[in-house]
Image (tube, rainbow, N blue to C red; front, side, top):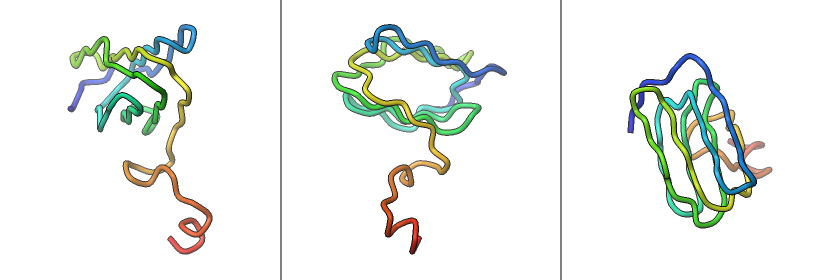
Amino acid sequence: MEMVANAGHELALKGRKYLAVSGVVKVDRFDDEEFLVETGEGYLLIRGEGLTLRHLDVEVGDIAIEGRIDEMLYLEEGPGRERRGLFGKLFG
């Protein structure tokens, strides 16, 4: 899902239960345990439990996610490359 992102990129986490993200370029994939979104600062992986998309504004590139947020991680590489183990790094 392609979005038109605004110039800035910000995260606002409220009590590990609500996350607002601005500057989103694309929502690559999501389910109840993981969201992968492309932002102006790179890919952002959000993990947790019971995650749901609560707000989506494709015009400005804003999303809001509700559920238990356990982890937020910026990836150096694109989708499918987020978790390479030691051997993947050595031989990949």
